[in-house]
Amino acid sequence: MSNLKVTSNATLSEQTKSKNLTSSEMPVIPAPPEKPSAHECCGSGCVPCIYDYYYDALEKWQQEHGSDN
Figure 1 (cartoon, rainbow, N blue to C red):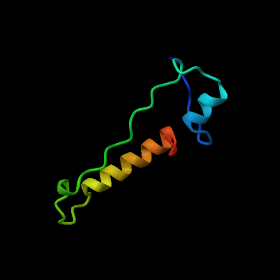
Figure 2 (tube, helix red, strand yellow):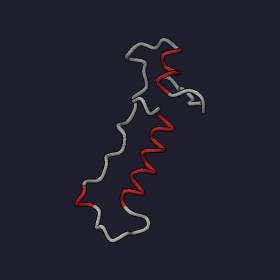
Figure 3 (tube, rainbow, N blue to C red):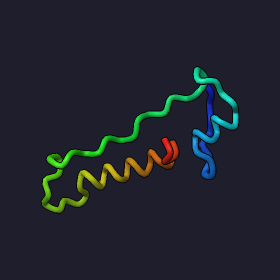
Figure 4 (cartoon, rainbow, N blue to C red):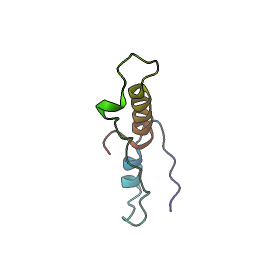
């Protein structure tokens, strides 16, 4: 597998396109975090809430893998 370094100005998909990698050479991008279902939040105003953890994880995933994936 190729070792691609993600820079702050290019997403992983942009980098792989610029290197003209075949589908077998493309790095595997993990699925984005799964949003908690409504019943997983207790609704009592916890800090942090389960949704806070989700949105933090989603933001990190988008930064690492690009929001277009």
